[in-house]
Each structure stands twice: as structure tokens, then as C-alpha cells.
Image 1 (tube, helix red, strand yellow):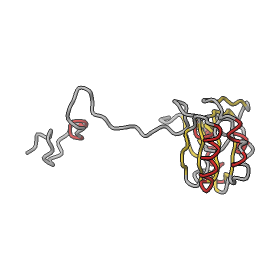
Image 2 (image 1 turned 90 degrees about the vertical axis):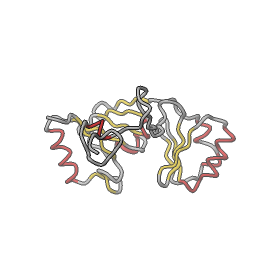
Image 3 (image 1 turned 135 degrees about the horizontal axis):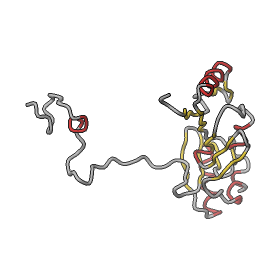
Length: 184
């Protein structure tokens, strides 16, 4: 067995219109029966996803953009960040914002409510990271447990001042006259 687990996204990957179809579920069950584990990744709050999941299918759910871990078999959840202040999620400017999802840690509203979210953030004065995701704005706590980490930056090795070279990395000769290729 080469792979021990499969991590997959929920919306638009294994679920269509919020539901896992029978054929997909059977395929996932065959994977679990082979001794592997399933890990579900979702932007949804646990409450919005747990009712749609078979409790015996996924070993763990990484919910709310990575801010909450949930174990379906036991019903236990663990926050990986502090929740946003309730004053933000209950702010008058956001009361009629749809779509709207309040999770244990993360709060989302439709992207068309950007001004209302800005108003609420200014009024509450909370330190919050706002991330655009398709048609949603995600308000999340800042810091290392933030749901969407910045993309890693490419850096060269501290031992080298030259940029990465595929010929050296693969110990091969490409013949393309690159700087380290011995073929001229």
C-alpha cells in the first residue's frame, strides 16, 4: 500500500450541490475498505457539513478553511484558532448579508457585502484577516492558524548563490546548454 490517506475537498470535488452522489460514496468506501483513511477539507462550518456526511466514512474533517478539526466518528471538534468576536458576526451592518455562515472560528459573507463587512470591522476594531474565496469573503483570525496561509516564496539554498538548476537537481545531462550541463 503506497498511500495511507486521501485528502479531498468537499464542494465541487466529491459533492455536487452539497451532496455526495452514490457512485462517489461507493468509491470512497472502497478506498476506506482497502485500509486507507479519508480526510475531508471544507470551507464550511462543521454544523453545515456534519449532517451530510456518513459518520463512518471520513477519519477527520478539516473545516472552516483549516481552522477547525472535526472527527465524525466521535462528534468531537477542536478549534485551531480563537473565534472571532461575536460583536463582528452580530453587527447590524451584516444582519441581512446573504449568503452568510458563522462557524466556530471563521465567518463568511457574500462578496457583494464587502462594504458592510468593512463597516463592521471598523466598528468592532478586531484584528481580522479577510480573504476572498470565489464568491465569498472570509473573516478569519490572523496568525499561524489562519485558514489560508500565504503562498511559499521560492528561495535558493543558503549554500548556493545560483538559482535552482534542473540538471544538477536530477544529476542528468540535458544537452540544452544550461550553465551546469557538461554537454556543450
